[in-house]
Length: 333
Image (cartoon, rainbow, N blue to C red; front, side, top):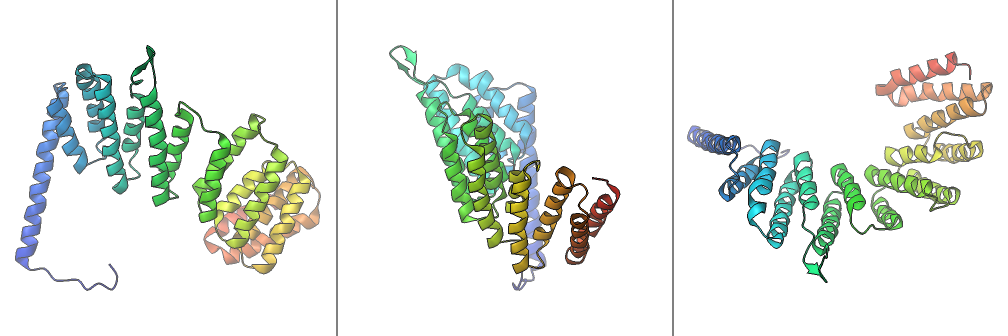
C-alpha cells in the first residue's frame, strides 16, 4: 500500500512463511486428489459431499467440483431424502454460494449453481391434496431479495444485474415491469454512472413498448428529461450518453434529433472541451446526413470541424476520428 512503510522480515520469518505456504499447497493437492478420485469412482455419499464443500471453500472457481456436487445430490442424497429435507439442503447450498459471492462476485460457477438450486426446489407441502408450490415461490422471492442486497453493496455489478434479469423472468409470480422501472430509477438517481441500471431500463422499456403496454412517445419524452439531467450533471460519464443514443434509435425522427442536438450544443457552450458532447453531435449530425439531409454541406463541415477538435482533446482515439472524417468525405449521403 502507498505510504505504508515496508517492514523487513528476517530470514527465519521468510522461511516460516514459505513452509506454511508449502503446507497449504500440499493440503490442497491432497484434498483435490481425494475429491477427483471419488468423482471418478462415482461416489455419491454424504462424506463425498462434505469433502467437496471443503475444497470449494478453498477454491470456489473449481467448476468440475461444483458439477460433481450436483451429481452427488441428484444420484445420492436426493434419493434418500424427503422433499422437506431436499428443500433445506438446497437452501443451505444457496447460503454457501452467498458467502462465496461476497469475496468472488465474478465467478460464473457460483451464479450457475444458484440457478440449478432454484430450479430443483420441490413443490412444497400438499394443500387440499395438491402441491402448494409455496417452497418454490418463497425461494424465488428470497433470491430476488438477496440480489438486491448484492446490488446495494455494489450497484454496478453486471453479474448481479444479469442474474437479476434471470430471477425476474423465472419467478412463479411475475412482478409488473413498472416496479422494475421504479427500481432502476432509484439506482440511477443514486449514481448516474450506473450503466447496468440504464441498460436494465432499456430492456424494460423495449418489452413494454413491444407489448403495447406503454405509450412510447410519452415515455420517451420523460426519458429524455431524465437523461438530460444526467448528462448535465456529469457530461463526461458515458453511461447516460449511451442510453441517450438508444433512445434516439435509428434516427428516423428528424425533429427529435434536432431537438437533442440543440440540447447538446447548449451543454457544449458550457463545457467547450467535452468529448462526449462533440462525439454525440458528430453521431447525430451523421444520422441527419444519412437519413434526412444528404446534401447539407454545412452539416458535413460541422462534423469535420468537431472531429478535428476531438483529435486534440482525445488523442488516444485520434485514429478513430480520422477514420470517421475520411468516411464523411468519401460517402455520398
